[in-house]
Amino acid sequence: MMRNFSIGKMAKICNVSIQALRYYDKIDLIKPAIRNPETNYRYYVIQQVFQINIVKYLQYAKLSIEDIRQVLNLKGDALANALTQQSRHIDDQIRRLQNSQQLISGQIQQLNDLQQITKHPLSVVYQRHIRERTILQLPTQPVITPLDYPDKETSQLDRLLIENGTIGNLQYGFSFPLRPYQSVTDIHYQAMLTQVFTPQPPELKAYLGKIPEGNYLCIFFYWNRQQYFNHYQKLQRAFRHRSPASSGVVYEISSVNDYGYHDEHNFITELSVKLPEN
Image (cartoon, rainbow, N blue to C red; front, side):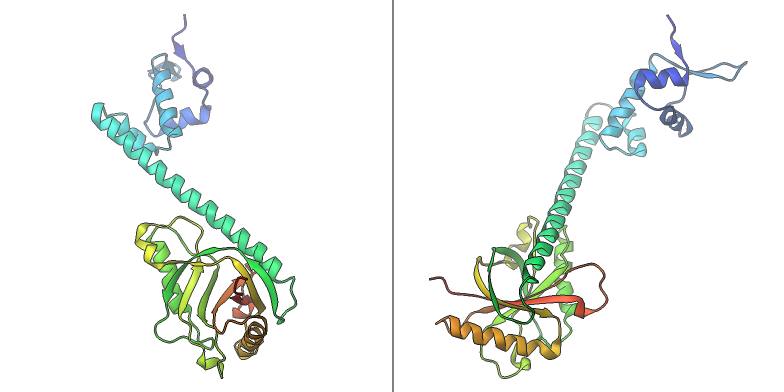
């Protein structure tokens, strides 16, 4: 029975491509065992079938070629340790992919919310039900008002998330007390915040909070510092007429509704304050 195989025959036996075998040969990973000195044709032997299968298995386990080269020379505990390390690496990749999937799902959710928001008249107070949202929040220091440019400060939110293995989204905001302010400069943000969609490590527990579920009075507008206080006053007056409560928390959430960002006026900002439950 034939024991020597051409590259084409070996590729069929091992269910790999001829290109893969040529690549293994080129990088000195698995070379044909026999060379005919007269024709210079090279052949594989039956014992190499399992060698190729081992390489296929390790590649399927997502080891790099260099890692495979090292693993092929390991035995016993060293081999088990190398595979255990690869298993942990795959677990980390799965976690990162799951985080990416959750971030994308969260972004889709935010875009769907924006579609619902923009169905309401621009710059007119409306009521809508808002689901509970998990947020990462930090106190604002020094004082920040709606007239400021807080990009440097809000970048702390992204930094905190990145340091803990994830990333922020394209929506950020602030919270501050609902009061009858006399001017926009009287509005001092108490916290800056961003919504989070992925599980967070214990190190971030102190920074996590909730925007509670409930019915909210809201107003939305395209970001405009000059018109901000006018929009706030509309919301504050509507709340005063609708609710016996004298105070509340205003959430200012700004989002982009597409990725063709040019300047801050592309942001849609919604101010919302939760109505007391009956």
